[in-house]
Image 1 (cartoon, rainbow, N blue to C red):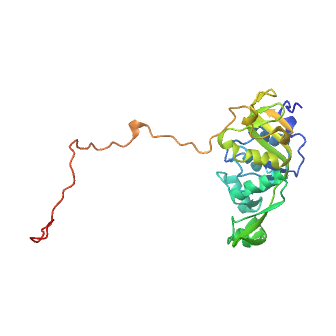
Image 2 (image 1 turned 60 degrees about the horizontal axis):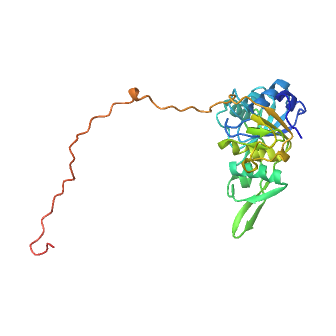
Image 3 (image 1 turned 135 degrees about the vertical axis):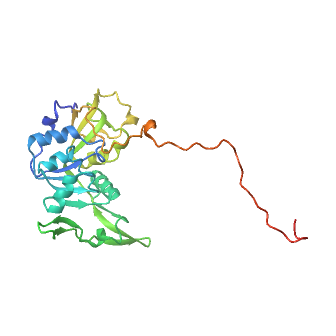
Length: 279
């Protein structure tokens, strides 16, 4: 079955207002930027989004957030997005902050059909006790707080019950996909994208390169096409660097004081030893 569609706009056309989305990527690495941009242009709103973070102020999910299209985020951290922090603290956005490993496992469990699991992450913290602010009121008080979690003991240890995550639609970016939807991810882009893909009832993939069925080595496939509904071509240059770090040019570096070429050893002073006791 050929799953390739002509455009990102065509792929996202069926996403309704109020849909739940699982979105791949880590920081701005491996994010489905073409599908997100198409959603912005489509005007779809009231979205409940599950993603490790929310992109940048002017990139990725940050574009949907800035346009007021997201009402709830389930994430592990705020990241470099100031608008995310502003909306959360002002009560415009509901945010469920989840330990990063727990978030990954909740998505994996959702894709595997496991409704819930127990984990030691968060034991003895406010994650267990409840009361984490999910949404603030305009006056700064907590309008919606996280509930306490069920705790059980296994092998003498305490564990929290976490529920799996599934989404109406998953948005994913792959390095390569074939026309049957089999996908290969590059480096760190494989962190969340496969888990997100499996957790969606409908999964849309944008791929930097699309090949014919049979061209991919089966052993190289990270995500089988059975989890994918549609594939769209993405611009391989459509990327951002979240925080660029460069070396200081050699000529701008502080001068280093020259060192003497003479090699000297440590000075050892022998203390006086009473006669007859020296070995």
